[in-house]
Length: 274
Image 1 (tube, rainbow, N blue to C red):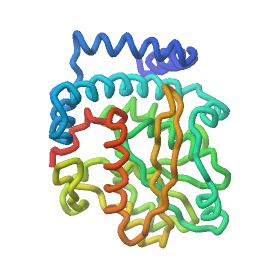
Image 2: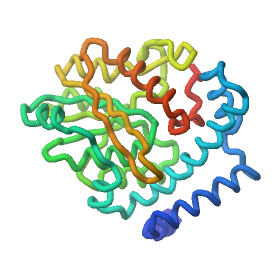
Image 3: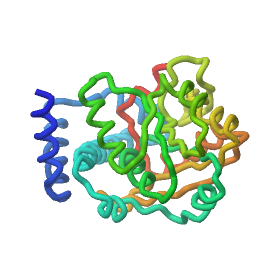
């Protein structure tokens, strides 16, 4: 059965992007009238994050979010067959000078991103930078088979992934200069692994693992701000952070990014459950 699912998804991925985006609109309409995927959580997250906005404005963000949400699902399926040239065309990184200098000087590098834009395509694009030796730290999906598909997608251009439960052991054994990507806006599993900041009008728990890793490895740290140029196309700004206050700087920059274009963040995630 799992092989049949993979074949179906792969065949879908071979369709042109404009056809996939048509499917996205159909799925979005179906969700709007029949399925209501995480509607309550999503709308509540938006309304509590922007208390000064009118109800109509929050609902506009809500609708725009779902437009983007289903687009990135189809973009992720497209990743099964997408080639390097397409990723290079669709995800542009502005000013790679500092990052390339860090790589050339054999520095350890920590990059923080978020569930904003298309984080799967961001990792694929970063994997194509010469000599980057990139590793992404990730949380396993509960569905074992879909977890295998995501691993296949993420590693297709040479990037490696490390599950969060094996991260400490990996660090102790791994001595080679590397780049580490953290999707750093996820909810920590407990208060011990996190620190609270005022974020989007709420006390919010953030992982401190990226900051601890940066200090341990004496790494240079960047925030990858992924902006949407138009549907299916992205621009990435790499902003260098202080290794002393990584988490604080990251939360401020991410909040600014979200407030500027809120519809591109993953509002359906139960971000404030702790």
